[in-house]
Amino acid sequence: MTVQTVTVAALGAKGDGVVETPNGPLHVPYVLPGETVSVEISGNRAKLVEIIEAAPQRVDPTCRHFGTCGGCSLQHLQMHDYAGWKRQILQNALQARGISTEVDPLVPCDASTRRRAGFTVLASGKSVQLGFHRMRDNRLVDIEMCPVLLAQISGRLDGLRKLARLTGGSRKPARMLVTATETGLDVDLERTVQLTPRTAPQTADLLSQNGIARLSSDGQVFMEVRKPRVMFGGVAVTPPPGGFLQATISAENTMSMLIAEYVQPAHRVADLFSGCGTFALRLATKTTVHAVENHAGSIAALDAAARNARGLKPVTTEKRDLFRRPLMPAELKRFDAVVFDPPRAGAEEQARMIANSSVPRIAAVSCNPGTLARDLRTLIDGGYRLERVVPIDQFLWSHHVEAVALLSLDR
View (cartoon, one colour):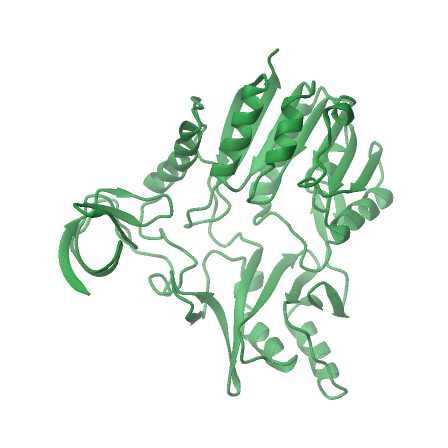
């Protein structure tokens, strides 16, 4: 490797600094535009050695693990510029698809509000490491705190380590998904949980001591102190083990409000990729909803919540793989509005079917600006007008951006 002094030209789409060189762009993490830095170069990437001249936008990072833990990339950038950079990510993705529109200012995200964390756990002798990988590195950073997460999670890291060890800690890295709910933590391990007559009582005690409502492995419940519960509007839902939820409640509420206000005139709404009811159950307070989702546990949780709730309009559910069998135009014609919130891959085939339909209003939700822009291009080419795009931050200090796009039929 060689050490060179360079000047950072811009921030890349993943939060790294971009240096223009005769051999092409060089990507450097943890630097800011305008800074002069010395770096160790390896191919088109570099490691920061020293900041020679700092940018005025640089601030002290909040977390002691920043710079080693790869969970955050931009704690060193002041929030005003950070918000502008995230908005620009979405703007650039739209422009790359030839979509010219004004993007709303970023809806901010507070620290200590994230309710879900996908940790990596690794046994090493009698100890268990729990944390996140380094940036561009498989090595694990054993974290002591995390300013992104709710205190309900970050304050119980030691208890989660004990749980991983007690239930059969593996020498191979395993994923532990932890979700904070109203009734306690919901913990799902990707490896098989091992409970013996000796460890089962200890595990039960550990769950109670650490506010853990449920322990599962790959979707199978092993121990449940009480049912995990989340609220979608005024409706209580027990999510399936390892099931999808929005990362923060504030972002979920913002998205739900934008969608509900936009589709308010509708009498019948289709909620596609509905999960366990994030939007469907809120919308059902005022309109009939048909929810479609391929994950059996999620659609069952939604259906159970709708049946037990009072004051909702009719909610019907359908388990269906919308990637392979999107709703066709003939099926869509009975709806006044469609909401869709697909995984990062987007809703390419479903967007094509909607583009050929006569549904008056569409609300598209996405955590991937690139696939969102692709799907919006399809809808616009099919005769829809893009009314509004709102970027929402629920992945604090990372390069990920959530967005809601609202469209109306213009033909």
